[in-house]
Amino acid sequence: MADLWLPGAERIPGNSAGSMNGDGSRKILLHSTEGSSIEGAVGAYRANNSWPTMTVDCVKRRVVEHLPLNTSARALRNDPGGADETNRDGAIHVQIELVGFAERPETIGSRADLEWLGREVIGPIARMTGVPLVSNVAWRAYPSSYGKRAAQRLTPAEWDAYSGVLGHQHAPDNDHGDPGLIDIDRILAAAGGQTPQEDFLMALSEAQQTEMYRDINDLVELNRRIMILVRDVLHPLAVDIRKQVRNDVQQLNVMAGVDTALSPDRAPGSGARQGVKQLADLAVDDEGLAAQLAEIEALVAKIGGPQEAA
Image 1 (cartoon, rainbow, N blue to C red):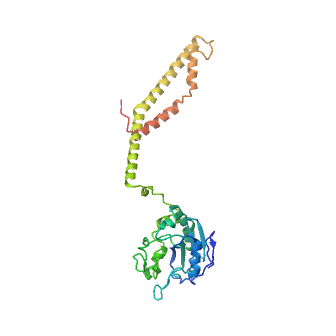
Image 2: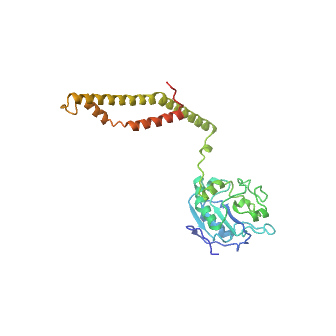
Image 3: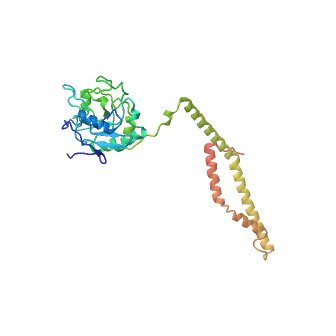
């Protein structure tokens, strides 16, 4: 198979751990660099020969790839006699270092930054490599995620069988707890093309939520009273005006006819005929007005309640 590279990523070449063991699993594993820059992370990789597949700075929207997506990285520990493989496990095992700190996930990125990570990095990699966009493991905050016996860490058998997205904190033979309690659901939602709506209620105190609900109730009551006003006052008034306009038009048409019959030589713009013209100039669309009144009547019946019979 030809080497797979993420389109658009910068490249700083690194060292591979060798061929994959080909057991069939497909993983994307997330680390945190425990630093604030890609340059600092690359210096550490070179010093320790601990290269991931790529390094991503979510805040700066920067992606640097070190190895092909279908080549093993070497950012995990592999104890003799421990898991059969960590770095070379599976058919695909993409290791991504995220710039930031496990103990402070906000340094890795904001909600928008994590959505970008899912949309522009994790999603495209998953589609190129066949890694499922799922995470069936528990993600724990650092430092409780630290240690070989940490509750969320997988056994060698679980590790071999796992396909999907996980973190350094889940790898057997390892004690690191990165990337901490990252918002994996948000990342996966964006990777699948669906970004969750911002849950602004999470940012409100209990008192603020109570005040907001009170305001909503007040607005609902105000809307109800407005609709009652429309039902009991404005709608009947519009109906009466329509009736009066129709009566006036009929009366003036009669008067205009009489006026013409009695004085056929008078100017067309005089007397009752002028009244008819003025009403016509108002552009009273009787059919259109009737339709609008019917719509209003249906709306007020739905929101303000049915109009009582007189």
